[in-house]
Image: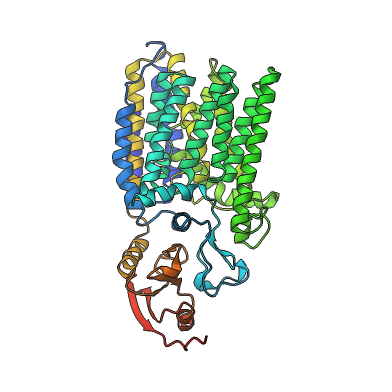
Length: 543
């Protein structure tokens, strides 16, 4: 019966592969049909097997499958990114760091305030002020991207970080619970589109997740051994996460630091050591962020996030109840269904079961639950959409905790019901088939995503170095503000790229940049990029 239900599920996925309702329909079928079938099937086999269930050693095979899938997909995705604006910003900030600076020189025509930036220079999430040109993102992830850029393959960074995250999940699962939990956790992660898509995209979440996982592992070791060094190293990793994703790092530091302190409350000497290490880590993180603020915005207390909107405080967070409710109603259900649908079947249900039934390591189970739960709760205060694409990326750094707990829950269920090993493997294989179908949909979506951006990138590559000035015109699914093709050292670059906001101003901008020959890159009626050549006679510059 369960096998037949899985076949019907795969047929539904195939029929709805191009529908936006696929996540809701898929989850509805999973919980209304597949879950009762699975429980009925397994309940009939209770107490007919061994108490200990050992899965085959598949971790190495899964890691190889991960590499074979993610690396070519990451290379392809880099040509038309799923999140064009953010990925372009990170890449541009990395190019700035490659010059040995944190900000680029301001462009001609720069206004005195961000709010009055000319449309021709107003790239998404960029900050252009007389002080310089930079993006609102912190420098941690661009610094890692720079390594990939120097190697000629910036897209390789996240796939490699994904392998590190898998190893950390394996280690946490094996050291904290059992070898079976570790093996099943790797299986659940590699067969989750949510995990894979964040290994493919050039965003900062995978790097931050690696640091959170490392901090989690070290906190577990420090509490188990009553040693301050692992806990202090865990806090140091979260300090390193601050210049990558400050809000996420703060949330996870709050969880892990509070957990370490709470579970050491009966050992006052050890607890005071944790307090001291936490204070040092907090001070270090604050000084790092204030120093970066001062270098970029000129004010230690004004972050680039705030400077982007011309304010003293960031606009991304709100404490107003009506706004929280508005964003929750508008985006909350979408991100929730996408996240649940894009993970292994019934992962969160199994994680809840582990939290309920865990008796050997209840402390670690509770900490893992909080590591994930803090992110959905904290991002209720977030005013921006997470661009839900096979899971909410704002919650990704906690996925490792949910996966390990889910794997532990599956192991506890199989052990408590004394299920036959063959039955467990059969159910896992059926669910794996479901996930492979989901991954196929993810690959298809990424492979066919944003073709206009790919066409524009190809046209830009052909123009680069041949024309002094290029005006990029939006149209046919392409927003010129979303991708900045400029070099950080634009003054010495052979080509400068501007947004074609007003055709009547082209000559004026050509003269400002002292680049008389220019090209407009625009779209024809069919949506294909076309080029229009132009030449401006600028008045002679007076000494």
